[in-house]
Image (tube, rainbow, N blue to C red):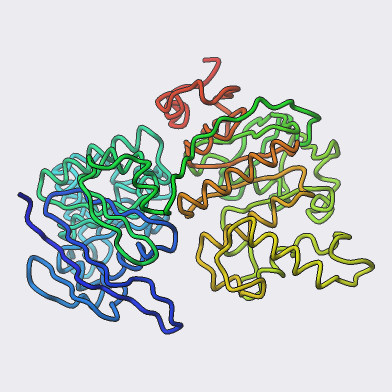
Length: 507
């Protein structure tokens, strides 16, 4: 039987504003296991991991490591105690090479300077021990997302991590990279390491974990052997009902073209570019754009939302040239945009829910006439959006910045999926939200499709692309390398081969 390596008893975390993030949580982690932690967005998973890693201190409760009670007062103490964490958003210096990133802060010295040869040898020894393939001398800015994750894992291992916390580790990986990661995680457990695996992807949780702990509303709902639970049962424990992210879409009757790109090429100051992009998006269609992040998706969105002006070729929105319109005029014609970064581009954090919901629509006649806003109409509209999108708040005057990430996303989606929107650019619409919120957002997008709106869906979530899209483009190095008209007819393996640049249609 496995031995307990880390144990939490009655862990409670209450913040100064009265929010209870964790309530009497019990958690026991065994040596050499992959232990999945699942729960809704805002359920308390992140807070609990921060407590384990010394980033937060509990209000009450006990923390045991190797059977001895301790207080984990800092990240530095956690690292010294053999705990490492790989965050969802990597903590790497893009301009530095792989070796320098891994050894940052623990560099071997030769006189006053870093001993680069010794540092490289140390990194190489650890990488070879765990069978990680690394491009040691490349700047981090030039390596793949999957390689960056390996760098983060080696960073933790070289500092002595025996317990490794992975926060949404497959969120931006291709299917092939995900399988490669799983092989490496299983090897780590065989070599004496323990993995805490936080994920929303229940299919992957079933595949990789030995045991699962479910957290709901700040409390543990139980810890179970993975083999004893089906995916439906896990989702029910998480959200209190069955949730499915698989959809049977009706066959859509496509209408007029609302967005068209012809031979569009662009180049940014950083050298990233789009190469000869052409496609047409019609009413009643969801056009997915897939690819490993950093292959032109952001540049495509920047051009369409008028944040990147320099390009060759032709773009028409609502049958008119994009260059002839401002983003304000396009919005008045029916353009909606769900940005990838909801906090900096999607909301006014210090304003109310009602103000945020009309921030791009206040000129609409349904909210007033002749610059005179109809407050009752605005509040009624906000109340309906709160109900329809199941936004957890105390009312339409709730300050958006105080909502959970998932509820902030619902505010953004509620505004941008308004009935007046005819063409929607949806960039990572469910990133960082829980299973229940993702299902709700997916149904809202499908409802828009049913009423004849056109949707450009840019997502790193393969299931989202396959389940929602009528057609899918795959970008690699700024170029369309595949165009699938029935995405469900293509395997994850095939998607991955195009996303990694191993294949290109027509070659």
